[in-house]
Image 1 (cartoon, rainbow, N blue to C red):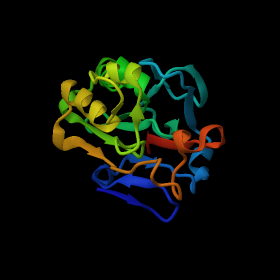
Image 2: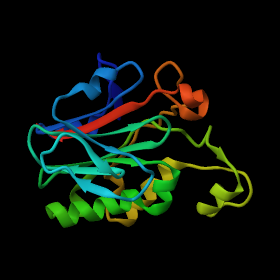
Image 3: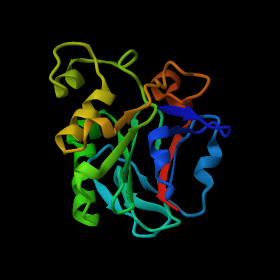
Image 4: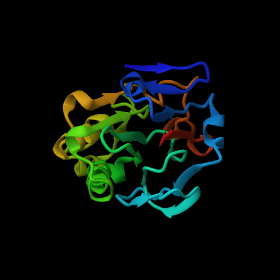
Length: 213
């Protein structure tokens, strides 16, 4: 179950079981979440490229998922409708922050991030936990035929990015009971969330971060 703290940051309550973990999904009311001195981010390009942070901070290049297992370091992604996904390896104390827009989802970014966690950290999919934060909901995400076709739909359709990424995580071996979704729509929640679809070029960005204490 997701909850909002007194800094207006959302957390997946299930992840609080890991005392060694730091995580949070920022809102338009919590810009300070991005001011951590040891935060690594990427120039996000709507891809399936995963980058290992390796203890580095700052902008580490092009890509849409950052992996880390260095204590004291955070990795983060910024969103304004796309899905922020935080992956946590309960056995090896490793994490990943994933940016999944429709293009990255079609390219399998969530599945690729699980594969890279296995490759880089020896993670077992069965031991991974995945939290899908606030993003545009199916209620508001109507797309044209060209995009709909990428998801196996015909004509204009409403796309469920949460479900599409949940299916990828399941296919990669993450247990269903270890996938947690906020169920919060960024376009509906104007008071809390930035939304590019709603606000266009005036939209800000929200940071979602995860790391090992």
